[in-house]
Length: 295
Image (tube, rainbow, N blue to C red; front, side, top):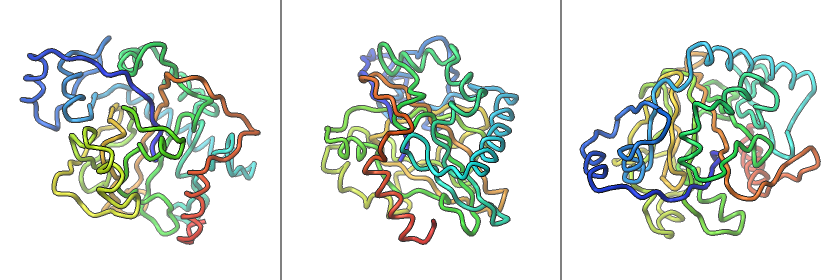
């Protein structure tokens, strides 16, 4: 399940709505000092935005180097979780331990910490709402997923879901929420990647709960689109959309892709530390991976 943030609804004008309607679904925007009315309207209508080259090639390379250093450190420590949140350990193409979901990454990578607090993303923070902060010590912190299609991988794909399920576990009704992702690979259809069904963020409560079998269904939907990204792109998508991650048609190192999610938060701070308990939905996830023989 991706990390989510709550958002305050934004009003759009009629001309912006009409312009957004005319744009193709694969439109790539440029991130400026503020989100434009047209971008607001596109997000409201379809539930997602793609901003091209939000971080540089040098920053992409620096983050990928940091991942190797963090993984080496965690292997040496025998680390299994951070602040009550399990680290997802799988195997690489050589059968060696391989982190497939880093949590609280900005606490271990100075490069990531610098990027997620950079003022170039103030427009995204303002899109979320007033007094938005980066929740580096909250929820799961900054999360980076590594998908790879090899034997022993526990993260080859991810079934259909909406992120409203987390709110239900937290005993609250799902609200508008956004996932903000940074991407570190050039991804085409053969590489797997994010699939979503545009407009389903406006579906009713029952459809959000029962339209698909959460996480167990991987079947392609006739209305889904593939979110094609390039290294350095930033995406925003409403977590209430039905979405999934397709497995790469490639195998080995060629199938590896990285996506990082930044928790922009507006609700009351709830900082986690080493004494924090593992949330119920994470315990269920660990059980499911154990039943599948992944751990």
